Amino acid sequence: MVRDDEDDALPLPKGARDLPLMICDRSFEEDGAFRYPEVDPSLLVKAGVQDDFMEGVEGDVILVNGAPWPVAEVDAARYRLRLLNASNARRYRLALTPGGRFVQVGSALGLLAAPVTPEAITIASAERFDVVVDFSGYPVGAEVTLVNTLGTGSTRDVMWFRVARRAKGDSAVPRRLSRIDPPTGPEPWPRGSPGGLT
Image 1: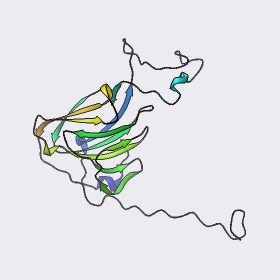
Image 2 (image 1 turned 90 degrees about the vertical axis):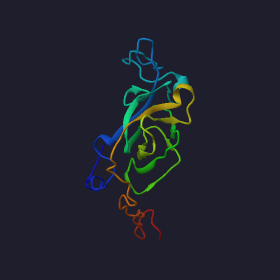
Image 3 (image 1 turned 180 degrees about the vertical axis):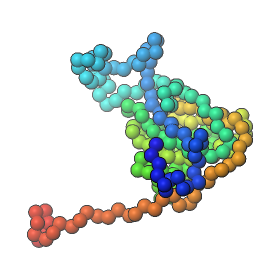
Image 4 (image 1 turned 60 degrees about the vertical axis):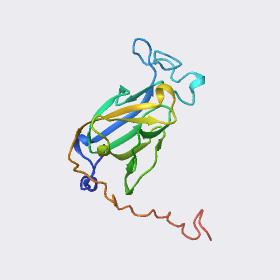
């Protein structure tokens, strides 16, 4: 995770309440080895996957930080979740159930200028989202499920958060997160130069 002075100065959740979540899908053989449709299973002679999988390989087990369908104990407080879709081909539309919402504070490019509150997060391969979730509205003992509404069966549930204890809230999401200068256009071509207007 990359941080800087601007990020550190914000009252966003920090420390144990700042969680990186790398989400991916895999399939496994009975012995626990990865099941992957490679052309050469030895990976020594010919690279690539079988023709039917040229557009990507989807698995039937969802992993978060390498663990299948994990449970994270959380305080009844705000948490910052650094979401990364590390899947080979699968897209996710992430939502919280029962109820709950995301407050997006950043993306792969860093902090947003101001927070936004999407109903759900659609995240493609290699995309990153930086969100805050407030668990203080749930009773102790509640389980909150991070679900993939694009998935079915074993690919619908991603992970669970179990609200373990009451805790003092020591964070906030400010209205302004970062100063982002508006993009500038390209430099105009000099008159008379190749590609320029004459």
